[in-house]
Image (cartoon, rainbow, N blue to C red; front, side, top):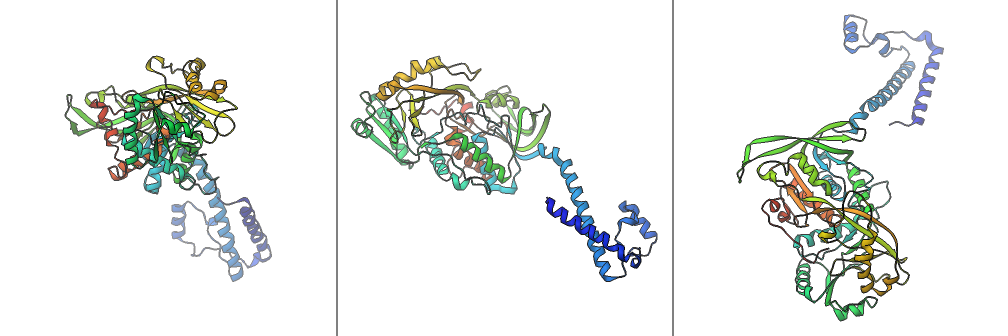
Length: 518
């Protein structure tokens, strides 16, 4: 777009040229480059112009040059005016695309990571649209988490996903940099996780530690004596040992991470639309039938119906759809027929909302820089927040303690009855703590086995699923984004094979449980 200063300069040129011809008007002869004829009349009919719109002819060479400049400036200014009108007329088209190559439903950490990795690899080769109903992310699982990353898992794929996730986090300033914007900063604190075990849990801790070391994780196994020497501010009478991460573990600001992911994706050309998916149109692939206990005709997602902020509903056509809607994935899956259809479509996506509480407390005598994220054998955790005596803590409830998910209210009695006693027993300086604040967030909880569901749905040939991470999505987002990109662009996993996390395990009732998991 031309600036106002440039327009003023050009306008002054036009004025100069116009006033200049007053002194030589008698030397000008009005004519066209061709003698008026039937050809001129026909040309005028075809172009819709009259004779006055064509360039005038001057006998004087100097005046001829000025005339050419004048006409060119007039034409340029006219084009600018028309261009502005075209941009104004094109505004509605920019609000909502009617078709795309890849449609991602959900713009949280998982959806935005998929968008980033696809666009970073394919660049202009793919038109990617992300549908996100809440651009403020006020109830998003990503932004309401404590932002931890660890490699201490018992399933190899989870270890590998988090190893890549930690590497990605270290390189965020470079990978997610946007020209002309502030450098990315996610406040990564590499303080490690400390997983504690009683005597009954030591065999599993040994097994997990061996797997983690084999896959390249920098983790140390510590005896009770070593724990007491390293962390004298904790008591370990009931503890037989623990594992602590030396590298690639810690915590970061989840909001900043999501913001940087989205900003970079947009910079690469990803289009974000604020709206809610309320329906789908699918197309049967009559030549593809899966023979199971009830024959299933494979289908494709053809279009998605999106309700915009103003209430309008629009449809967008896509070649590939990706369901990355977190806790809402099960509900959206039903709109496609997953869980309410025949055969392979009779199995629902087992993901639902589970409310979790995070409490922030203060104590003046607590641990400082040597405080890792500590996980007790019963799942109660805590970590420091900065160096001013603030700490975050929480605990997953039992099935009997699961709170209702209809609101975002915090149960402070849960802290007093089930969290604080464990904190005070483990760390005596926490006996005099004062709760400063608290919030509730929703896990995209996989009720089947609490692990992510990643891959193509077997009965919907162009639908990818990436959901159900049950509290680990923020730390696995980078790895999942890369994995989905590989499956789409290369038709196979190139780095970490996530085949075991596919939807097929749900259908075949083959759960993949973590052990020693929070």
